[in-house]
Image (cartoon, rainbow, N blue to C red; front, side, top):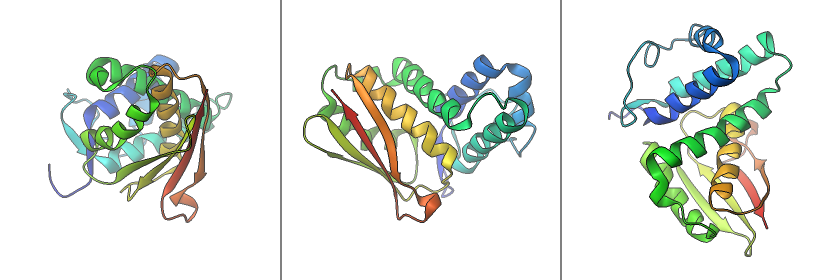
Length: 191
C-alpha cells in the first residue's frame, strides 16, 4: 500500500455486483468504459487487495451519470443509498460478521472507526451518540469526496443499524464537504 489513498477491493467489487444485479452486465460495462477503470476492469480482485480511492470515486460518479442518461426512472441518490445497504449486508455477512452485536448500537458506533480503518487507508470516522436512539457520524479528511459517496454511505449506515436489529428511522446528511463543510456529518435515528 503506497501513499496514494486506497480502499479495500471488497468495497469496489460489492458496488459492481450491485450494479450488475440491478442494472445488468451491459450497464456495468458501459459504466466501466466511461472512465479510466484500468485498476478494476477485467481484473480478478481479491477482497484484501488495495485500490485507489480515486477509482472508486470515479465508479460512483460514472454510475450516477449512467443513471441520468440511460435509466432516468432511477433516482441516483436512491440507487446509491440502496447500493450502500446492499454493500453493508453483503460485506458484513461475508467478512465482518463478528463486528456486529445485535441490539447494541453503542457497540456498533464504537466499531465504526475500526471498520473504516480496515477498509480505507486515509480519512477517519467519528461517532457521537445522541441519547439512546441516535448518533452523529462524522467522516473526516476523506481523500476523494463526492455526493455519490455520501448517498452510498447513508445507505450503508442505515443497513448497519438494521443488521444490529435497530428499527431505523432515518440516516440523513446534515453537512457535506462537497458543499463547503469541513467534514461530512450525518445523523442517524432508531427506535
